[in-house]
Length: 185
Image (cartoon, rainbow, N blue to C red; front, side):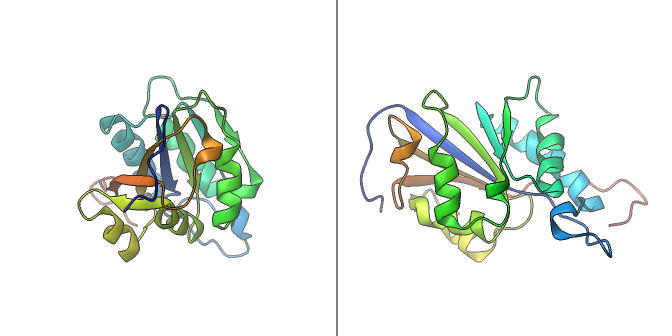
């Protein structure tokens, strides 16, 4: 159950876990690229966001190569992508760090996209969701795979009001791109 209902405009936090990454030998974690599946799934995530009418006013993205590339491929599916802010704090962030970054979003932003990593993103979604539509919370608890999208909504006058248990998990989507004939990965 949602702990308290806020006042103000409807806000949406759209949480996108980066697409499937590769593990090339000798490449440090921050520089890992997307795998073939990630290169297919990231555009599918962008299309899913457009179809769900969840295009953001602003994106906050980890500086890791796999997160940046996920953002680039997803946002390329939209006519005019919104501004993006790359923030090193999102790389490997836990819930308090993620909340700190999100709460810095400008007041005029009503839909904010957060592109980052697990386990932090999954834990953030579960911490913020006081409730969910249908079985969305259970789905997130079961698994928050690469390219997964969670949409949290609540009412507030600004992002600093976002607190544990105050949002409704309205949607959980795991978009997947199609393999081309003969494609590996």
